Length: 115
Image (cartoon, rainbow, N blue to C red):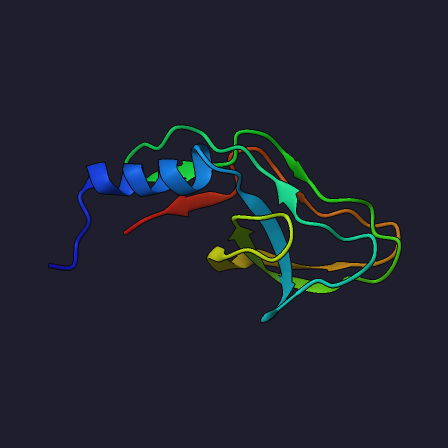
């Protein structure tokens, strides 16, 4: 079998994103941003529906004190540092984060969908 039921999708999403801490990370292609002013951001997610969930608030990263480069991918970890990468996907739009820039993911924009 290769298809999850909607019930199981909701269990997985609740266990890993809603009932646990989920930290959003930014990537330059395959490498997580690694600058002094960068840190992963905690993000709350809404109750799953139709096998998906999304962030319930805006996710605002710190204002960059140095060049973070071209952010091309977004990941979700289970820890502020280290931890396990749970999800990773290409960002809809790549964005260069330079000194004094800030990366923002608006409310309900980060959608995690299980197929």
